Structure formats: structure tokens, C-alpha cells
Amino acid sequence: YLPKSHSRWASWLSPSNLVFGTKVQSNEIVDSIVSKIVLYFDAAEKAANDVITMLKEKGFSKPNENHVMQQLPNDGKVPLFLMNVAVKILLHGTKCTTPTKNTMRVTEHEKKVSCVEPLFHLDARRLREQKFQVEPIESFGAWGYSDSYFVLNFRRDGTKFVSMKGMRYSISGKEIPGLVNFIEQELQVDITPNSITLPPVPELNGVPDSDLTPEEFSQIACTINNDRNRISNNIVDRARHGTGHTQHDMFNLRSGSIKIRLPDVVVWPKNEEELSSIISIATQRNWCVIPFGGGTNVTHANHCPEKVTDTRRMISVDMKLMNQILWVNEEDGLAHVEAGITGLHLIEQMNKRGFTIGHEPDSYEFSTLGGWIATKASGMKQNKYGNIEDIVKEVRVVGAKFNLAQEHKLNKVSFGRVSTGVDLKSLMLGSEGCLGIIASAVIKIWPIAETKQFESVLLPNFDAGIKFIKELSKMRSMKPASARLLDNDQFRLGQALKEAPSKLESLRQVASKSLGDYFGNFNGKSVVCATITFEGSCSEVKLQRKNVQKLAVNHGGLLAGPKVGKAGYDLTFAIAYLRDFAMNYAILGESFETFVPWSKLTQVVMATKK
Image 1: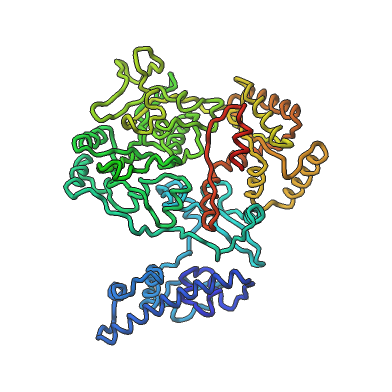
Image 2: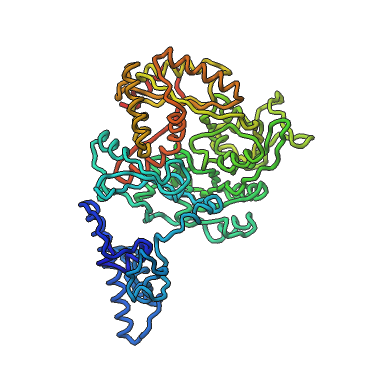
């Protein structure tokens, strides 16, 4: 799109694709986006050129990059990083690789040595090799990893599709052709790049400064051995630790309009001793301490009370550096783990030892063990392993006046169930940090299951789906590890999130639909899907599968296969990313979880949809 008119910028964007004279099929939307980009390029280059000319007129024959940058206008009309690139281009030219058959027509100017690094000239193999070597960075103002998010794309013929950036998930890097059409039809909206409402990276304006004095800041720093890398009153850190992941929080961050009170400082202890020191000084100075795990809550639990209610200093204690496995007792199936460890790290570490923790909430990649206990969390495989209250045996808690723990004369053991007074574990479950900060916990662990399999069941309608799941829940020890019922809306959303099928897959889908129409009343606007996960011994899973198949037939259902079951299970982890993609285009959506009695389930679902 750019080489002829803006060759130097095109070289910066992607030198490996710099082929002059190539005819590119265009369309109205692409032309509109390119025009906007070009306006920014032109404005950046003009601003840089004006400053360079002005400096030369004043006698600076060879102005350097820093000198030019200091004189550039910072009015927000042109992104500063683009003006920086413009300065590099004008002073040094663009940096190109050795000409190949695809880049033979590079101009003489572009062969000059330059310090402009190309923007998208990336070695995909090197990135794949580094996938698990680089510490992942979370997004700010959005769910998940900063390298993983949905983007809107266009084919050369102008048709829209969505893809997911990054390489972390099964759908990453694949074309998803049906999602945009599904959203547009369901909500009667038009999704185009021109309709983006909120910026992906917000600028936080008008956020009050921290109330903490330099002296108070230094006092807190002393508790962590004056490590200034583990204490911050930066606005972004304070904003992240003063919010969770509700739609309301994300909208405020994305719009740059934060009207809630934020913590005055964020501090990262790395052991129980430092944690005790932080709480001790906070108690002495009458400061409020708010524990922070993964920040995935959807209850405004990290919001600070307004000053009219509470005038104390607000100290956010981020627990993520307290992430060690302290010991493992394989014989008793126990592990003592620090509370700041994320679910993903804990699962990986236990798997290396041949064990599983059995707890897998939707947020497990980012949420922490301490957060699970403090919020009384439930996981997707609770049928087999239980909820967090069934998995945790003991906790260690750092409080305002003393530390609480169940002491043992023997090492690496846990009594679990005792009758000697108040049960500390039960006291802390769901406490949300009100009674102290959970420093570590002893949890159950299980040997990794012999086999893990997926299945899915199509059912004619939501009522049939509820009856099927309810009957499945009565199977006691024969229950699958996980069973989820996707209503028709969510099932069709799941279908829309599928990658473009191959010709063979398309034929299979047509055949499956024909069979569904033939054998049952599977209307596209009413059909629902139950996704099933099995874990256990081969004989156990085989028996569970037989029972599921029998139940499916009894309720007029059809087995849809493991691939659909796995996709439905994985859909859970994409929902929050999808919410933030929709927010780009002024579409608001939210997910939440609650426990409902069977007798009230249909009523609650219908009322929620209404």
C-alpha cells in the first residue's frame, strides 16, 4: 500500500515485504485506514523536518537525534514514537537488509547505514524458541497477556475476519471467519476499523498523586531491604492494583477516566518476614493494607474506600514474588506453597513432579493460590477434585498483631481436620483479606491422571440440556471431571470462534448437520451443547463415557465428538479476551459465575438474559 508514495516508511514497517510496483487489491475500508496512517506519517515527518531546518538555520550544521527530539512539539496530535522514527529516517535513513529477489529495487538512500530498527521484521522461529523463556507480560486495561488479543483483519477482497495475536492458545494466529458476522447479526452493528471507540493503551489523566510522603515511602522501602525495584507509586502500578477485571474497571482504564481512589503505593514482599514487617509498620502508622494476588477479581475487591469514609494511607501488597513451593510430601499427597504463586506456575511445577492440583478456575493463568482461598474459588474440574475448600488443608496468615498457623512437631505433615477449636482454614476461606494476608498454604495434590479425554453432547434445547446435566450430577463417583452446558447463544458463539475449516472438515460439518436434522429436532436457534472432560484411569474413563452416551440417548442427544468438547473447554479461556475485543467497538459484555439451586436455575438464567 505504501512503497510508491512513502518508501522510507514502508521500509520501516516491513522491509522484507518491500516490493515496488506490486499491485495490491484495495477496498474502501483499507483505503480509509491507509489514508489515516499516511496523515500521521506526513505530520511526523513535517514536524521533524521543520525542527531540523530551524536548528540548521541557527547554526547547528549536524543536529543530533536528542537535540531534535527536545524541540519537537508534544501536543498529542502525532504520537511521539512516530516523530522519533521520522527523526531517525531524516537523519540516518532507513535500515534495510541485504537486497534479495524480493527487495532488489531498494533505493540508494535506503542502502545507507541507519539506526532505525524495522517495526515488523521479526524472526518467527526465534520468537517460538523464546516463547517460554521470556517472562510473560500482562496487559494493562485488558485481560490476559500483552501479546495475545483479538484483531480485526481484511482479506484482499474486503471480507472481514478476526485473528488472535501471539502463540499461546490453540486459536492463536488462525483466521476466524465467522466471529464478526456473528456479532454484527446478533447485535445489529457494523464492525469496522473506523468504529474503534476506546484506545488500546490508555493515557491516565487527572489521577490524584499518592498521599504518601517521601519519609513514609522510605519507611516502607526499609521493610524490603530498600529494594526500590519492589516498591512503586507510579500511576500505572497504582491504577492496576486499585482495579480488578470487571467491565466497569476495564472501561475506566481504557477511557483513561479513573474516578475511584487508588492505592498510595504498591509493594512486593518476597518472603513472610518482609510481609510481616510491612504489616507491622502499617499497624503502627494506622495505614490500610490491601493484599493483591492476580487482580482477576470481578467484585471491586481491590477498590480503596473513598477518603470521606477512610482517610488512612492505602498500601497495596502484591504477593506475586512469594511464589515458591516450600515442600512436597508425595506419600501423603501434600504440598506447602507460598500464596503468591499463580495457578499456571503451580500447575507446571506440580506436573514436572508428576502431580496435579486439580483446581482450574477460568483465571488460573493469572490468579493466585492466596486469591483462590481468599475468594473461596471454584474450578472447572470440581466434580473430581472439589472446590478450593476441599483442596486446602492448612493456611499461614500474617495479621496486624500476630501470625496465625497450625504448628506441628513433625515436618512436612498436615492434620487437615482437627477438633481443637476454631478452624483457621475455614476462617480464611472467602475472607477477602479482611482478617490478615494469607502467606502460604498446605494443599492436596494427586498423581497426574492416567488419561484425559473430551466429549460433547448436542441436545435439542436448553430444557433438555438442564435435565441431562442434572442427571449427570447424580452419578457420584462416575461423574466426569467437568461438565458444562452451553446454551444456544454461547454454542453459536463457540461455532463462530472456529478457524476456517478445510474442505474435508466442511463436508463433515454438512454431514453432521444432516444427521442431526434426521435423528432429532436440532434447530439451529435452539440446539445446546454439553462439553465433557474426563480424567482418571483408563477403565474409569471408559465406564464414564458409556454412562454419558447412555444419558445422552435418554435425553434425545447426540455425541458430537472430542474435538467439539475440547473447543468448548478452551472457549472458557477466550471469553475475557473476546470481551475486550468487543469493547474496542463500543460493545459491552460481561461474564460472571454464581451458584444456583436446581429449582431456581431456569428462572435465574431467563431473568439474566432479560
